[in-house]
Structures are given as C-alpha cells and as structure tokens.
Amino acid sequence: MKITILTLFPEMFTGPFDHSIIKRAINKKRLEINLVNIRNFGIGPHKTVDNRPYGGGVGMVMRVDVIDRAIKNIQPETPRQRIVLLDPKGKTFNQAMARRFSKLDNLILVCGHYEGVDERVKKLVDETISIGNYVLTGGEIPAMVIVDSAARLIPSVLAKKEATIDESFSRSGILEYPQYTRPPEYQDLKVPKILLS
Image (cartoon, rainbow, N blue to C red; front, top):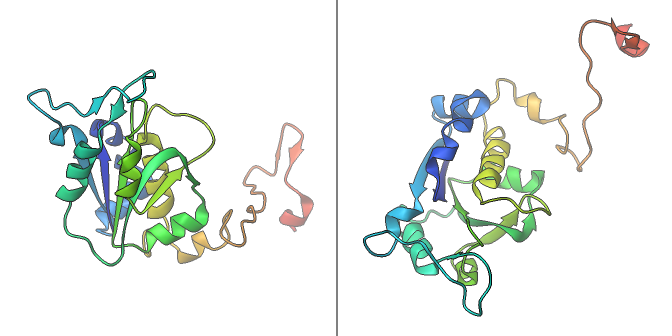
C-alpha cells in the first residue's frame, strides 16, 4: 500500500512514522509513505499557497489551484485509490474506514492548514474526513491517525493476524474486554479471580 500525504509541513511526520508498527510496515515493504510538500506547487517566486477569503473573514485559505497541481503531480490513478481531504466538516473517521483504506493500493491524504482550504477542493477529492468534533491546527495530525489506524490492518504488518480480530471496534463496534497483566495484586488492586484460575 502506498500512502501519499500532501502537506505544508512534511517534517511533522518524521518522528511518528519512524517507530513501532508503521516503521515495521515500511521495513517489510507492506507500506510506502510519500510526503509531498504542497508549497512546491505554490504560485510565484515565494511559492504562495494561500490567499485572503472572498467575503472577508479572519485567516488565510489554501488555494484550489495549488492543491489541484499537487494532486495531479501524483502518479496515475489506480482502480483501488482514494483521495481524501482532511477537514473538520467531513465524515467522522472510524474503524470501518480504516479497514476500507487498508485494502487500497493508493491512499492520498490532503492536509489543510491555516483557515482551511478553498471549498472547491472538495470537488477534486473522493471524500472528506474528520477525526472528531474539534479544531486542530491542520490536517497533519488527522493524517497520522489515519495512517496508523489503516497501516496496522494491512496483511502481515502485525506479527499475528489474530491481533486485529478481538480488539476494540473490530466486531460491530464493540470495545475490547479489560486487560490485566502481572503482578496479580498491586496496592490492593487485584486481577479478577476468574482470570487467575
């Protein structure tokens, strides 16, 4: 699976993708992550990527033409590809979406920033996704969430296939059962007896 992230801040992804399951998926060649700096497609000598909103308002809005050029620069479409805009007004991300994304050949995540993106960008993507009802500085953290959630579901990324079967949200949105480990008692907090028999 290849995930391309269009962002103004590619350096934000270095740490999170250099550890744990994502790093393992990359090392096993089950996952490829391509970071594309949207500023490379900016306008003029200063590589401008945003402008003032029509109708007034606070903040700057990312330009549709710049984002369109960045999307078109990515390798040709494949039948199993999705382009996703990360936006607080999108559908709320869930485990079913993570499963669906993990089966793709290509996933392209477009990270907004500043006051957001020109509304016309939504016509250039397949879907718009949010990770919750709150505001973040940009789409970079939601992109990390989606990559982490989908990557662990790619076949042979986790050491045991069964690891994804009984975890939270794997079946009908049910949360996983409580987990305990050693010691059996800690400061009067005990592991349930049934688990010790």
